[in-house]
Length: 402
Image (cartoon, rainbow, N blue to C red; front, side, top):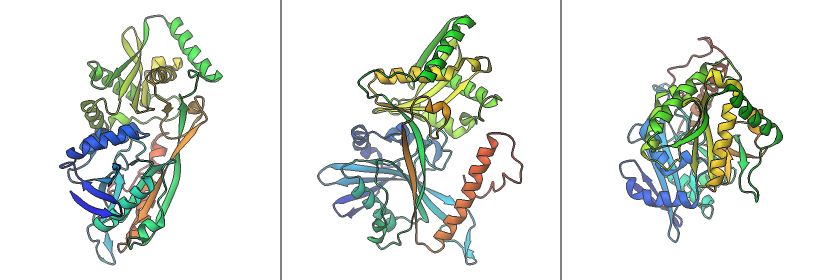
């Protein structure tokens, strides 16, 4: 653990080895200013570190104020790129190093959107202190920071004030459909959504059998069976030639480890599996996370025989009604906007990534090169959703780019 004073703010860097004393204050900050993404809470971050990160690569920056205590936490990690990279004919010192928020870059499948934890009363000054600390005490070529639309954007002077060259690259905003639940009246679905829900009820009635919508939270006795159903049905959905392409997120080993870690740390991320059951057998499943006032809709799955029933829509409404009864104020869909999500709401929230490019020799050049490789991998991943991709397109497997 290291510490330096930055103005009236104190910045300390923790690893997993010494983060336990910070946890009470970190959890209290998360209760006071809940993250938008439930997986950005302290216990979920630690589960993510354990599932995906080698010991010692984490950098948990804790920013405290003399009068108000802990006011910001940036749960970062170090990533090393392009092994064997050279600069002007010589091996590049310390390889190529970047810093990212927990949940980013390394299999960001369930996590999807990262964020720091910032007290709104101190957000700008605390973030500036953290950026200054990173410049003085960490070696890096660039730092990626994902910031919500209600959090401050980085300013060039945060770098110039500590003697660094101000190079900040903003990324495109990532939108999410937000369903507000804080009105005076109970939530009511729009007409086309009501029709979809009505069809589910009428078709299940005609199909016969005993139908039920159930929910099991992480840590409850039925959790292992519910998780097994989710895995099975999510894989079934990925194999169906229906609708848009659908990758099997849960076949990635790290995501299974993450869910197991979240269950051990329940109820901090509020993981819940909702199922449509016919005669006691699950034919559709939906994973949600919850923290503070937010319900986060994650991955789903459906069996082929249940596809025409639109069961996932019914599960989303089921999860929303539970969240409303629990006093939550909004439901967020996973990033991206499409017609199915816009049936629920036309209100959007956004997150934007900002990249702080360092002034080590070659940092800007390497950042540009890695950016091209990351774009290549993104295009390849999207193409795979709709069919096989040739080897010529899907190369660069040994580049260190994820």
